[in-house]
Image 1 (spheres, helix red, strand yellow):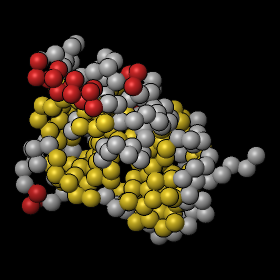
Image 2 (tube, helix red, strand yellow):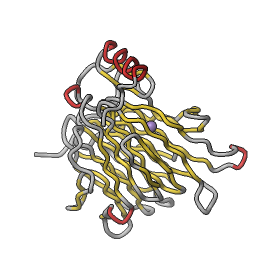
Image 3 (cartoon, helix red, strand yellow):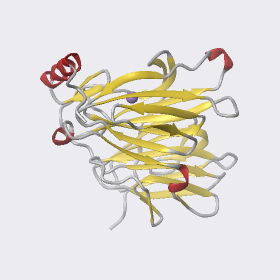
Image 4 (spheres, helix red, strand yellow):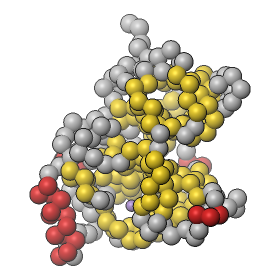
Length: 286
Ligand code: MN
């Protein structure tokens, strides 16, 4: 049987938005009832590389219910603490995969690295109805625990999923995600089988690459690509430039969603419940 490479179906220009206590972000997509990226809800790129952006303020204590938030740092760090009693720093190359379940309160405060920059991503992954009110949990993975696969001019950091026989440390996630940081040197090729029916997106954040079924869709950073149906993702760095992208795939849940700020539930009634739990002080139950 011939494997069908996936075409680039959408090429999204991320939009600047302000979130939290005034954090400037590049947002590729955010939560919406249309649920176009099921099981993914949001993809943000926070990059503070310009002194005129002012002091970093971050995301003071806030709740989440019904989702998973995935933080991946490239430069700088994020200091975090939460209602489970966790506290720590997510540094360059580290990942925090947080499953909010029924309720978590947490604080996320970015800090510039030695180069004076902060650079990283936050992905929101939906939870299926059956797991939205489960216990909150974390998978904290330090940079050294994330394996790098690939040879010659291809370097693939595998956070979740499998590439070239190398499996990522993040497992047991409902969306069966694949999450990889792919760097290809000029002219280098990349190919990865992906399960049929899974949603696949790629966030191209450095350089220039070619994507799609004919590997002829030219993409300059920074863009979010959404792939159509098929069995295979193909990519190649341009002849005179490297390319770096986050490759993200997951199994859609096919359930209706109602997003409301930091909550994503299946019905309006469940959103009302979340708000009343917050008011009554019963939101967090460790
Ligand atoms: Mn948060």
